[in-house]
Image 1 (cartoon, one colour):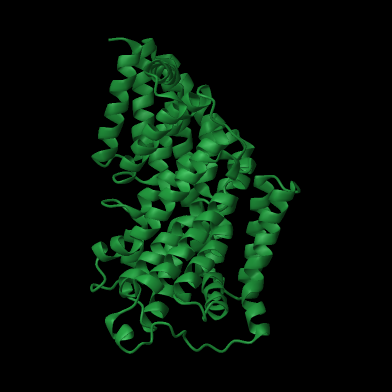
Image 2: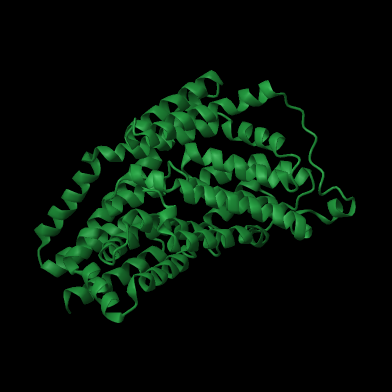
Length: 440
């Protein structure tokens, strides 16, 4: 067998290992180790490349970004900042038809700017927004679907762990990836808002319960009393965090790692001022930060080794030559790549898709003339669609398990999130056709 044939066989083995339940990091490491050993017939070389990948994963200063942003997100989550943000958005948008749905998107957009994890947003707003929406006559499936749909903003609006992972894998600036995610994130949020308002006006039975429509209460907003001073007090912490982290990052005053450190410290101060940190909660935050961060860093080490194996086998070059010779062109390749990502999103989680595909696709995309920042935003949006599509749909499962309501089925939540999938695909097409929308 040729090196290329061995490489493709190993990629197939990798998919099988992941699908049967093997940890993605273990599968990547095992396939890469065996691949280099077999292709070069050199056990020592395989060991040496694995040690280099492990050392680079620990020694790279940029990787400190991950635990810092994870810590910031966890501190924000336990400080009830998400609930306060939703409360303020609820008051500010109460006169809009479908206002609670719009408030959920608005609060998720702001919350995404300080967490960077879709699952965290889904868990927080399931507890906060869904009960409030159902209490005011919204269908539980629509309420849960709105939370699941808008939670994907956490992986696109910076800081985002997926953008960090892509930046490391594709070897592009994480700071530039953060800046590039801003406009697409805002476009997604605006698209979600338009879908909610349009559905409330033209398909009210999709949004409101039959009882609400029968009583003509659908257009009415919940009566909430909150003074400007209280609104300012509730929204100030997250505004300060956004200003510190994103303001410093976009102005060039902070590097991504420094922005993570400043954000984590500011989140700690907020948690202390709100008296949210007990001894047990502090320990839980520290251990969760370590667990999540170590898991991601091991994945990146494994992916680095996997990328080296692909290079040794000549897979990116072979696929690039195949695409060039087939006459598909750059956008033909992009279409096939996005379709593959969407299909994988139905069976794999976001990180696994990036770890498997980016080491193969990024060199090919660069060779075809794509800006890797632009290509990365397209990749992340396509990957995020998988959070809302069956059978995997991890955001849907997170909302369902957090909600704990047997009457709200998984199928109904998938249906409630379907319009948001349409918006994401529309924004994906816009970004692909108009690269200038991505500020890099």
